[in-house]
Length: 101
Image (spheres, rainbow, N blue to C red):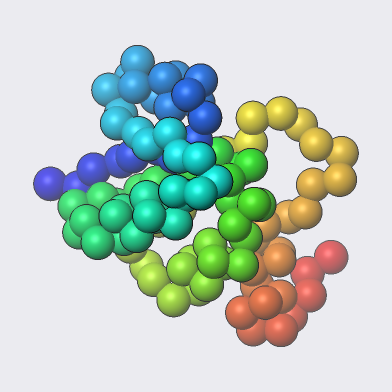
């Protein structure tokens, strides 16, 4: 059976736990350990990742997204940012060298 998990702040994870979805509340120092644990667990199909953690670890997350099909990492924004970088366009540019404007 496939599972969905979340990674983010206490408030972010709590919002999903109310709906029955388990989650991890990492510090920046243990974020990589949690991602390694998620990648090793074949039952996890989707990871809702708080956007703040994605951007703080963007190089690693982009490599994971470019080389793995499971689990699917979905960045979830918490607040609207004016200078937001389009994550999909950035990933395409890094992976195959095509810029989408």
